[in-house]
Picture (cartoon, rainbow, N blue to C red):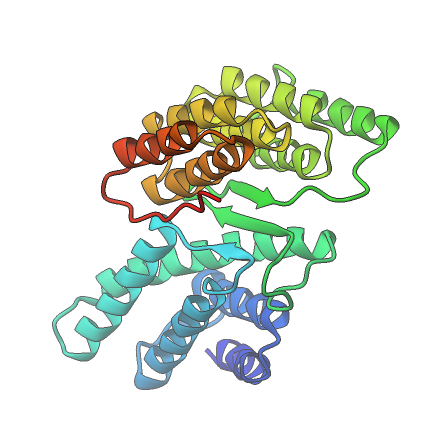
Length: 293
């Protein structure tokens, strides 16, 4: 356990400095030592419980950053971890239950490290921008969905073609589902960097090969249509994503953006109100205000 506590000390220092990326790396390393090291037996003691509590609190802070979208999977893992820690401290939980919660938290930490690595590759450090250009949503299977504003410069035709070639290699018949995260990332990169036709082609191909990921693909297709200012088509895709399992809050946000764009594009009051009523019909529980002028 000595190696674990040495790593936790390093994590504590980095977390206190709010060095989000370095602290996340240290936290992941701590979990790997705890879960996968055979050097020493794990002793469930107050110091260990305190360290795990600090790790889960840090992850709770991390997912509040604007670059990371909090979703049901993240919320469930954090809620389970908090509940198991509280129950264990109160002598109402078995060590095995706490252990399973720790494994899930370690898994989430691993996925978040992957997301942070991708943001770092795009030169978007965690916690540095109030309105980041790129937002990542981490999924339970480890895949990531990316959302962002299109880059002003965009890709050259040669760069877009090279990226599509890489995409096609990953999409080969021999490809494994472990490649899916890379495929979704490449499709999202094509989109946010302005290669919209290539991005649409990529999303359709992913959906064909991986039908279980229709929600992510339809959301991506909706974003492509939105950037092409085909707002009604964007709404169609977003609603298909909702049917396929996309979260209602995310879908409502996407649809509201397209409805607002259609409202701004019209000079007719009745046409403007049509989209207000359309939104309220599809999302009656969502309180959304629209600008009509």
